[in-house]
Length: 63
View 1 (cartoon, helix red, strand yellow):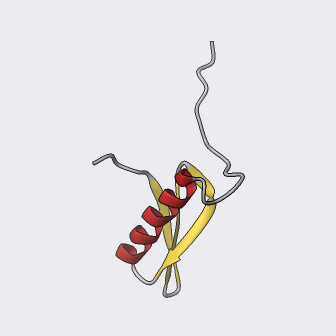
View 2: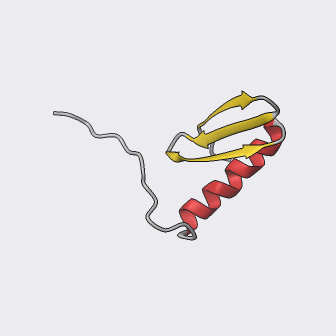
């Protein structure tokens, strides 16, 4: 199973985070496992085209 990078933090009782490839799309959960489930759902929606005008992150190699 491929690994997916994500960034997360806790704000009070809420766990917030975003996929590293899609930092513009933040989601939340009631616990870290719940947040992870929401992040997987978000990734599915972002890659399926269900969310329009998705911004992508990529790397360039400078010569």
